Structures are given as C-alpha cells and as structure tokens.
Length: 324
Length: 205
Image (cartoon, rainbow over the protein chains, first blue to last red):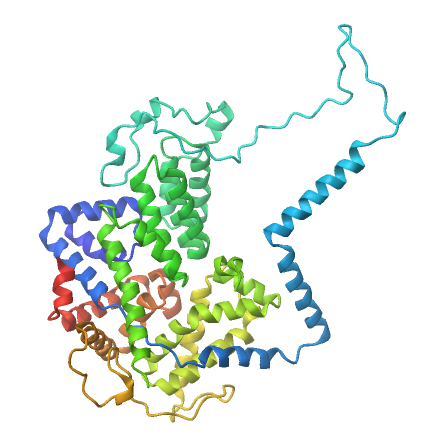
C-alpha cells in the first residue's frame, strides 16, 4: 500500500469499515510511513477527544412519546385489537421455557400414543436363516448431518506466520496437514467446496450476499481457512444486513476460534462491540471493549472507545446534575 | 423490560411492534430517543424545537411502522425520518412545530453547552474548578455547530447515529466518496478546534 491509497482508506480504517486484508496492509503501512502514521494518529485522537457529548433529553420526552403512541392507536378496530392480543400471547408462547415444556409434553404424549400398540396389529418379525430378526421396513439412508460446527480444538499444524500481526489467509502449505478435528471430506464435499478466493472476490466487489454464503460454507466445512472465512462471512452479513444480523455472528467467531485464532477472535470482538454500540446496546459493547483491553492490537482502541462511552455518559449526567 | 426483549435487535422489535406489541415500541424509544434528540438538537440548534421534532419523529415511526421492512436497517430508516422531519422544520419560516405534535410552549432558544450548568443560565461563566473535560465538550459542540450543514450532517450520522458510510450515502443521496470527503473535512475542522487541549495531546501519544 502507498500513501495515496492510504489516504483513500484512512477513514474506513478509522471506523473499522475495512476488510481484514486491507486493514492489515494499512496498519503495516503506518509502521513504515511517518506521514500516514501521523495522519491516522491525529484522526484517531480527534475522534476520541471530540466525541459528541450527549445531552439528556427533557425528562418527560419518553413519556410523551409513549403517550402519543397510545393516543394514535387508541382508535383501533376490534379486529386489530384481537390481532394485537393474539400477537402478545404468541410472543409469550415463543419464550424458550414454554417452548421446552411444550416439546416435553409433545414427546411424552407422542410416546404414549405411538409406542403402545395392541396385539395383532403388526406383522410378526421375520427370521433369517441365522435366526436374527430382520427389520420389517428398511430405514432410509440419510446423508450425514453437516449442521454441527467443529468444536474448538487444539490448533492444527499451521505455521506461525498465519497468526502474526496481520490476519492473512493461511498459506497453502497448511493444507497438507489437515486439522484433526475435521472429518476427512468426501469427494462430493471436496468437489462442492467453495473457493476462498472466489468468495473474497465477491466480497471485494460488494456482492455481499454471494460472499457470505460462500464464507459461511467454508467456515462450516472447516479447514485452515475456516476462521478467516467465518470472520469474513460475519463482515459480509454486516454490510448486507446491518449490525443486527452481524453482531451475533461476530460473537460466534470469537467463541469458536478464540483459542485457536486469537487475532481473528479479537478482530471479531471489536466488530461486535462496534455493532452493539451502534445498536444502542451499550452494556454489550462495553463488555467487549473491556475484553480487548489486554489486546496488543485493540487495547488502545478499546480504551478510547470505553473513554468515549464514559465521556458521553458523564457529560450527560454532569449536565443533568447541574440542573436545579 | 424482559431480558429477551433487551437482547432483541431493533429490527426484531419493529416486527413485534408491527404485530401489535406496544412494549417493543417502548424499548425502541428507550434505546433511541436520547440519540435522536441529540441529533435533532445539533441539527436545528433549538432545544424547544428539538424536543418537539423528536416527538414528531417517533410519531412518524408509529404512523409508518407498517412500512418498515425487516430486511432493512432500522437505524437507516429511523434517521431517514429524522432527516425528513428536520428538513420540514427548516421550511417553516417561523420554525413552528408541526400540528400533529403536542409540544410545550417554546422556551428560550439558547443552546446548552456540555459542562456548563444550566441552573445559572447560558450567559453565566463557567464556575472555576470545573473539569477540563467540560471545556473540551463545549469546544467540541461549538466546532460541530460551526460546521457547514452538509459536513455536520455526515458527521452526526457517523458519530452519533453510527451509520456506516455506505448507508449515509444512501440517506443523503451523495456518492460514498463524497460522504467520506465531507467527513474528512469535518474531522479536520474539529482537529483544529481541539489541537490546543491537553486531552488531545495525550490522545496523540
């Protein structure tokens, strides 16, 4: 990367809107270029110190907003009121505890109904020549379930270069030592495995829907690119569907790869924190920033982000405390 | 508010509200009203108008709730409404609030500054011994208010509303490169305003 390109991407770097590779290249550039390092540092300092102070709204604002909402909806027809009642009831029914209880009752009831049969209703079992019972109906052969994600395991025989500073695609040499936690892929799976490079090309061309589909599949299949593909997939979700869809995916990357790919996990944690902040979930954001304080790459940024959060809230509470 | 609702995304809350769950709307208001109020305040620079317009924004959210598509970003949709409401305010020569909103009688239109105690009124001097951060906050607000409208809009959308540049470009109708250019100018001006502060020098290290 040169200074001209750095100038084009510096804001994306400042606001974490860069893809992993470009960000790594930009950070490497600042290590060697005094000018660009100064620009990056000044912009970051400006953002940290000059965060917009949040003033508290009038005390009754929320109450009046809700009052307006009630007034607006007070003239609902009977049909809409019934629909609302059904919706609220359904929202209770969707709670996990009720769902689990309903599932348990269904299982118990189903077992009582289906397992108990009267004598004579089923054909007797047939015996083979060896005297072993043959199944009456051959069970259909189902393909192996691929929904289970590989559990975190000791790192495969990947070279150290895959985890140094910049997050880069693992070199092809790592593929020669398949990780122990992933079952050998069938020929069909190998034939259908999306290409990381093709997914990356879609990502850089902003075809985020196609990119995330491929990255998600690569991450699910495992292998040396799984961690980076999971991260890229989450980023693609962010740019295509927003932080609401992306934040839990970033958390999933951290959970899955925190032990084996710490730098990727830190990157994911940072993005999750930024997403939660944008969603207004400040406690969630704060937790993730705090988790990054010990990080070499993100520690200082996390400090700044926490200070920014505290500064905004302190300014707001200081303003509120000064009122008569 | 239940833990389940606290973990729900804005888009999920809107879907629930579309289905009639008024508590989902209450959660949305709790999350966003402060940011909306501050965005409007920094845009129109009139506290009384900002309060009335904030009410109008959420009234529009209620009216247009059925139009929200859950695949879209709620924040982008919300701040599109904020923009429309602020623009409508600007077109009223008297700056009066729309009739659909029950607003308080207008108060003195002085701008509160971060760190300055409101009890003494906006024209009194800052009491001695106030923390330096209040000076930085006040200077920051002054610098933001002094920005040209197009720069301030982009700056607030990025810093306050935390919308990515791509969505800001969609909202403003400008190219993404133009949006970034405005953001850079805004940050440069802010940097000039803050360069003399100790906090800034400390942050540079």
